[in-house]
Image 1 (cartoon, helix red, strand yellow):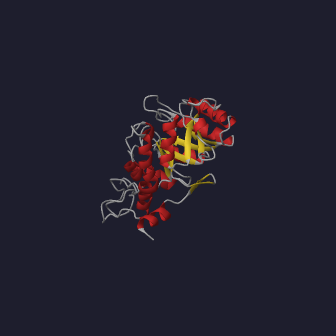
Image 2 (tube, rainbow, N blue to C red; image 1 turned 90 degrees about the vertical axis):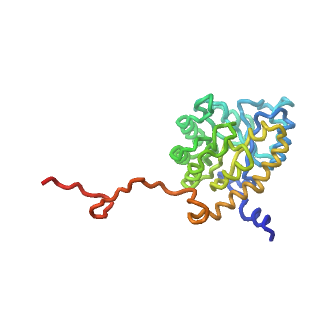
Image 3 (cartoon, one colour; image 1 turned 180 degrees about the horizontal axis):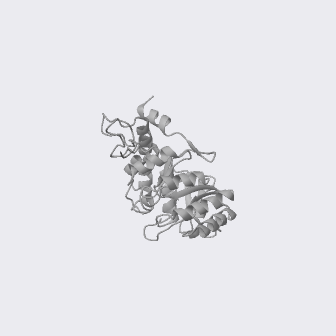
Length: 288
């Protein structure tokens, strides 16, 4: 068995979300492309299986040839409705239900934006919408920030996957806080898919090194001068850089071989130890 075959077979294994097996760990979006044909070429080149569609911004009737949906074959791609552009829980729930009524499946990538400039999520509204949609039978993949507490609450609310950002949407800044992503991955039992800000193949590799289940990319492809060419390059993250990142999790960094481990448990800078007796805490002495 060659080294490349070993990596391909041992590290890029299928994974599951809500009982559905997915072969590709790369998901892609459909926004910002210059034309539907350019979009399809880039998606095909990327090898992605899951494709997100912003329901607020497309013609759900499939009646326009210049729209997005007529060019996406549901038998070829798993179409994931997306509530991008929703700024409150009620709108997000409404558009998720609209997508399902229009023929989408019960899966939804749930976004509730809290700030128009940075597009950072409103986590309180996101949690509210998650609870409502889960109770309504949806499989919720929740886009959130890189905060562990929010991620844990989303899991408790019934999210089938949590999608923390690498950096703000469309920024291409890459993974800004690897420790937070790795901590979320280790603490959650549901899959963690990193979404937003993954701008290059090397970003994809670094992100997958954190042990996450997958990544979602859109602007990196759609805003490129040659989206199809970038799609082929990103496919190597799905086939090489992403695999390399997952391979890295099998051989974690050792303190004596290249530096500190990437994720260490927090420890106080001033140990709470009794200097007099070596105990962890000193009992207050009574005044005499």
